[in-house]
Length: 553
Image (cartoon, rainbow, N blue to C red; front, side, top):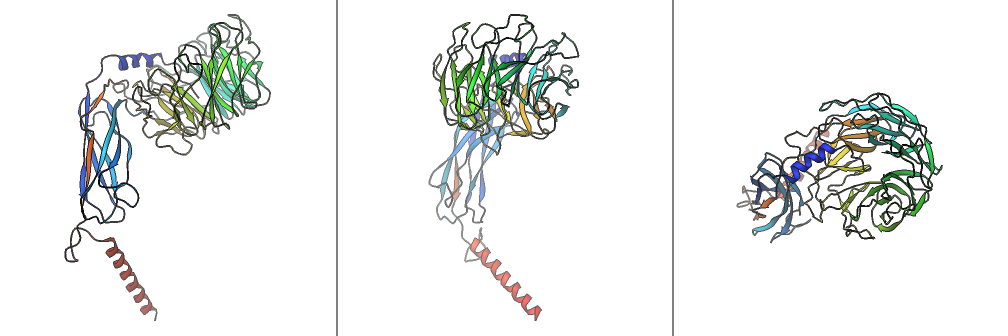
């Protein structure tokens, strides 16, 4: 789910932090370790030490991997090959990288190498307050943000699958508050089993209206026009107006497909493997919504989510749909003429891409929007040429490490102010800090940090709910009939901290495995053979068994 609106303050902070004067350059080095080859069964860790000089005001992510020297990595050999990301956090000057050396009895000195591959200045670890829980309707499934009453705050709108309603929770949080507050939900009727919700001003009256998609066979989507008085504490919406779509339009998106200045509606129809595009033809200020009859475009099997993004950087919103049973993403490049009455798209299938939900963000800061696939936790970096009519993405790269159910619901937003979008989602909210270098073709992320919510979050989203310039998190709790709000608690001084390029002064270190020292004359010495230990245990055990037999007689 790609929801992270209401962030002008964040954009302003990032413009200052990412484009203004940078911090001082940091320099990274590494030193090796050595020791006698262990002869105990579990082996031992050789610890390589990362050191930083220069600016310590920001975190540095360092990617590394081992390589064989005379020592050989792998099971049954000398050491366990290692690769990953180590972080020297802000204010720290060192970090450790352990490499596991396996037991053995080599008689000659051997070595292996630890190589530092890249070092990147990144923002601090994301942090959030404990959840505050607010009641929603029965079995809520999706959420969006909209300033429903025009007071400048992001209100919550939630689709309740079990109640056939949408809930409006007006935001009453004070600017800079440490605790969120929302008015009690107000509910408005929809069709059967609403599973998707989006907001846009469909009739040009300056108020955000609601669009709703359904996981049913009625083949329609709905629009509820906003009639709320500006500044009012009571939300008001009209009855749902229904418009024909495909079979089971369970996901929706909003975009100005034909560039006429009005938001159009897109539905993903999982029941007939299509996308429906409904062009907005409502007059400005009209009392009713109005759309041209749907135009349909083929996808692969069971599109379960759809987003509108500019894939080829031509200024037009293209469409991407993830196909739940097709193992692919359908990308439709927008070829619609300006103000045309009929939409047109050129389709590309991106495979493999397994999941049920996805998000979009410029993960590697190259000016192109990438795809983050939920359910499998993979990122597809965008390689599409500008203005191309065919989409191209690099093969999916996994989040590391990937846990079971990694990001079943997915979003992306900059949560720590370093200009890079974090990836988040999951059954508790899992946040993966992004350390991907600008323009890189290899994904870099840190292990997830987990934040507790109620049972079974069915959607996640981000918005600045307390006007402090930082994006907060919302999780929709399906079985608990509620939403959880987690306020961003990254320190103001660290959020958007200045950082610069990082130099690798010493990019390689040696791990030395000294020869095993046998016991002198069969006694003493610096190590004990595992076979000697085993023999001793067997001897003691047999002796004890004999004693027990004597006692029984």
